[in-house]
Image 1: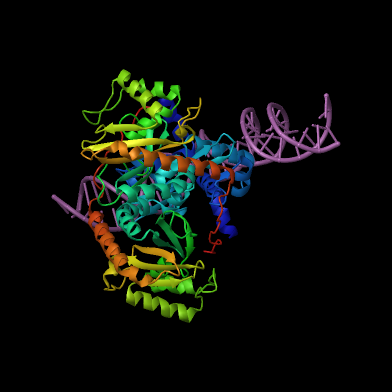
Image 2: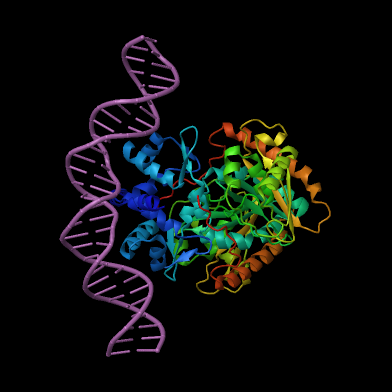
Length: 276
Length: 276
DNA sequence: CGGGGCCTTCCACTGAACGGAAGCCAAGAC
DNA sequence: GTCTTGGCTTCCGTTCAGTGGAAGGCCCCG
């Protein structure tokens, strides 16, 4: 820890990135002093670096003097593969699912030991829910998470199960044996169904998106993502949602493979770089 | 230009940010050498900095050796106000509009002299279109752009009109006088309607979101955003879309004002920081 | 086998980053 | 009115982290 903290703080780039990392969902806007404290930097240093980041619009400073993440950074982030490829491809199919159900539609990937939510559609009628685009939840307590965990390599699965697992509700399965059995079942069936394991009153159905979603399970074919839907638990038969989910997931997987070839996917219709 | 380039390259942070800025839609994946060339840095320097950025997962290096924008950066970007507030609030209303029309629904803000697209919903049935989330288009050639330009301060408007305007189609209005007249009309009516000015075959309708969207035009009330919809030009009567658009825009504006008060908006349900 | 990309590592030099300190400003207490 | 507090900004001498040329490794192709 000390060693890592050492390495982290040493380089200028590291310090700058620590400034960025000081922001999170609970702290989307920070005064210079808060920023310095959270990044563990001397005020003067934070001031200089934050100023520099601001001049690049990686940070923005509001009229209240607080710093916020800048829209330039947001723009940059959208170039990340998760967003630019996965999201782009999946969105129309997610739209279709939403139209058909008017429930929360989720697209998530595994990032380390977390479920990382890439996209989420919801309307006014959907169940309110804890997930958030860009947010993280445990792998073992959600539908999409279970699918991702079941599809991950044994390495990851072992590593994940070998640590204490949070238990958001009384229904969350955390006993190792039972969880492993469930995961095998998920892998076999090609879908996960979890009842109130993350939030009381909500049921979640999910399927993998990727090579493994055709039923055939290749040796090293971790799914690229998971597609899921969350409905109220009193809803008649969540299992009915599996076929449309699978259809959508397969379509997405196919399109992903197709677009994997062309590096610059079509319409480069950007604005010519207007002089300031 | 020379002066700015000078300042830009001097600081380490600047160099690191230049590396990030080397990525764009047309170049979402770069080899180290390309990266160095595009950022105008010596190879060794690019190598070191890129490595550091990678260790923070601000960049990721694929199996092909190319660098891409990292998902950590994507996550950070989602904390930007455009995304975390505006998008969150507007999305359900945009969903409703999509459901009702199945057409492209756009949410955009003005960023300098560009229309910056914050969100875009579209399904399979919608008109294919050039806009892209995080993308930029001219202010004078789209529905949302015109609304934003009409609502901007005279300073901005003058500045924008004082430069040569691109003309994507033969229908794009670029004559200053005519454009100014149109903008006044947009401001008065509270909505914009453009026919094939950006893309042949598409018509766009848009309304402002924000203080000015109640008809009353305060002195300094630039709209926070613009909400628009793009349909095929042969569609019966695009003007019919104005009332639902206005209703949605007002609802969004109201919710934006409401949530402006509470700094941390509710459910902080993040995962406890799992040890690596 | 030699040439040409592309990537990685090394290391001596140096100028850019550092951060303590001092000063500024506004709000609130007394 | 003055004093205190807290947040922000600027300054500047020291020093150490960043720099980048050069050399070497790897792979592919002719």
